[in-house]
Length: 545
Image 1 (tube, one colour):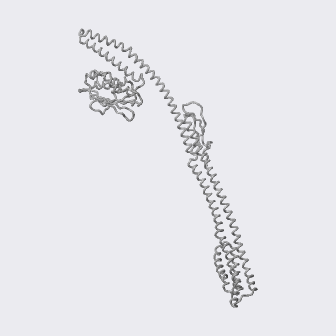
Image 2 (spheres, one colour):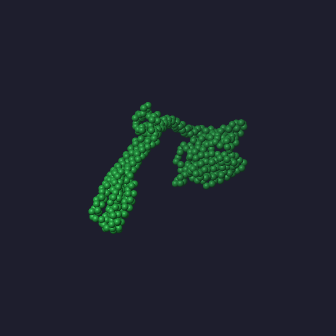
Image 3 (spheres, one colour):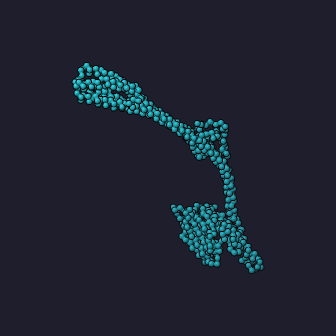
């Protein structure tokens, strides 16, 4: 089994000193790159450990079964063979004694009832011999002693007992004491082999008990050994898995935490099983890629800072231009317009018609130039001063817009219908300008009918109010839906409709300044419908007075 946690390079491996791309500084560690194919995968390590443990378990079970089999064999020999053999041997001895005592009583008394123990002893002898026969198949010495005992008891009955019984039965009187003593001495020859049989069975039983004790001791020792082996095997498996898998994983997790914590120069050590090694290599590759991308981002940030600096400078120049336009340009323009109007009033009718027309052109151009500068200034101020937004009532802003457009509304007979409008976070003047431009466009681009302007609002799920300003005017073709919001873009000539072409561009700038969107509803028929969104104000905001 290959030690997967070893840090020594395998044959054919190379050393690399990797420096993070785009960053200066010393290399943190020297990393050894190995061929991951030379490492065992984690599944093979676990399988090898489990196979070893299973082998130990199977071996322990086999040894335990052998010990249990030996114990059962010894116990079976004692319980089922030797103990019954000893019992039947004792009963056989009793049966033989009954025969001898019954015969002696009959020979001394000549009374038939005294022979009852003799005959019952014969029957018991046959029964016990029959029971002993299968028990003595594995006990040849005891079987031989029993055979001698049987031959001698048969010889005692045929040579002494039966003739003596016949003699007493024929004479009808007891035998003399000498004949009885002779029969007793003959019977004593039976006792010797029977005693030898009993000693042999007792010796076998003692040997079997010793074997039983040995088998029990072996079983206990085997059980203890099995427990120790299994415990050691589990410990070895745990230590092996810790060294082969857990420790490399912990090391990889620690390295990954260093990298995740922002130390992108920290090298991840590719060690452990094949999967962990491969994962560590992938983490290193990802870290190096992040370093490269971070270097690119830093370069991009430098470019962005340079661009931002240029934009700040450009904005500063635009602000200076706006200042100049609001002061230095308007003053001579007002002077030109004033003198042109004075010339028109004083010399009208004194010059020819062409001169009067030229003067009219000059006055009109000065007025339009002044209006264009005013609109440009208003457009440039949106979001530039950037006062802190407050909670403003849209209804109040709409009312102010109607006041500003009162003359146009009276002249055209326009009708403005508005739903209940919410309050939003904005600047009052900009919100007024938004409604004023949209209503002013609806009044300006009216049809032959009197203008009818309907303002509605609904709350969206995304946290925005959706406003709609719809009119019954001449409408706008869908292909111009984006063009109309571009500054200075006009769809009609100045002879048809006056204006500078800044109104809708200013509406878009105001709405987007507060995080909303504005667009033309191209599905609306019968006029134009402008929709815009504004964020819903927090509930704890107080309305600005």
